Image (cartoon, rainbow, N blue to C red; front, top):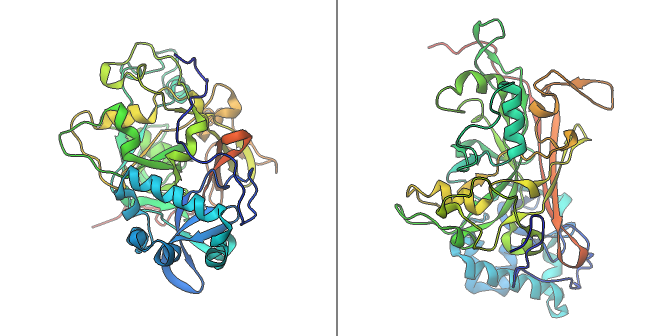
Amino acid sequence: MRGPGVPVELVGSGPSQVTSWTGVAAEHPFGLHTLPYGAFTAAVDSQPHVGVAVGDAILDLTTATRDLLPEHAALFRHGNLDALLAAGRQTWTLIRETLTRWLTDDQHTDALAPLLLPATDVTMQLPFTVADYVDCYSCEQHATNVGQIFRPGQRSLPLNWRHLPVGYHGRAGTVVVSGTPVTRPSCQRRGPEGTVTFGPSTALDFEAEIGFVVGTPSALGRPVPLTDFADHVFGLCLVNDWSARDIQAWESVPLGPLLGKSFATSISPWVVPLDALGTARIRPPVRDPHPLPYLDDAVTEPWGLDITLEVRLNGQLISRPPFAGMYWTAPQQLAHLTSNGACLRTGDLFASGTVSGAAPEQRGCLLELSWNGSAPLTLADGSTRSFLADGDEVSITATAPGPQGTGIGLGEVRGRISPALVDAAPRG
């Protein structure tokens, strides 16, 4: 049994350090050990294409497979990852191996070099069609901080929290790709003096999270066990689950978040395959009480992940949340959300919930960083923030350890706050 924080070796997790005719450095976050997938449009062609990031360039996989791998070209023909996600693990592994061979064998240089486009010359699109969206609440430090903020002197964690991965079902239609402006939501809220009004949120927040993208669906009525996680989940992306804390606080009793969350959720344009993260796997923290059998990963290879996120507000680094300390892992989240027989669909997205660490500079949202406004965050220009102001831009990036001392990059999810569109309640 491995102790907490000890890496887990994964056989066949992807290439070690290899050289490429493209000249991409082995230590580049998007080197050959990463090879994330996304969708893009270029100035010369308005139709979306599937691409693979190779250093600072993007390989046009839609065109490359049409010419060099016609038997699998249909996976990329429609310009998003939907068909690839549905194809299943055997195909995912085959395509990744093919890409590695193409990029390391000089005989493919003439055919592929013209298909490597500068990343700065394309526009990234939503990489896949989001089917369902579930957001979990799996970080003990975040959940504890929230409990201390809103229930001082009382039990910090709800009674059920250490027994199951808490979550809520979100709105798939408002998941947007990085760079999409986020309009400040307006809704009903209750002020400190008890007056209920309708208007723009005054407590808009970000949440730094990791998202997991489902590929292979499951049958209705058949729970997905922990051991089948890698057969269903294709890869990871970054998530910013924007939250209007004042709207959320007023509406959440008794059924939980709705309009305080559903206005926008931003994801990174790149999906990093699970196969790239073998060297990032670690054992998660000890669970107490011991999980019920369907959540018990003590007898399986654990899926804690050593990922470090960085959050920037208007370009200034304000937090470095560590994903390694997450109490509930992604396989446990997946096992729980299907334990009642709910089925998976290709394109389902489930997120970790806010990632926070023990130190103040590791907190993954402004609610914690400013302690709900009682200790505003001071920025480099002298301004302060309890919550987000119009015009603020939040950027979240993340890295994980790669093979032979390299790093795996998860890209960036970015969003800027636009002013609210309405200041009063809509009328019929």
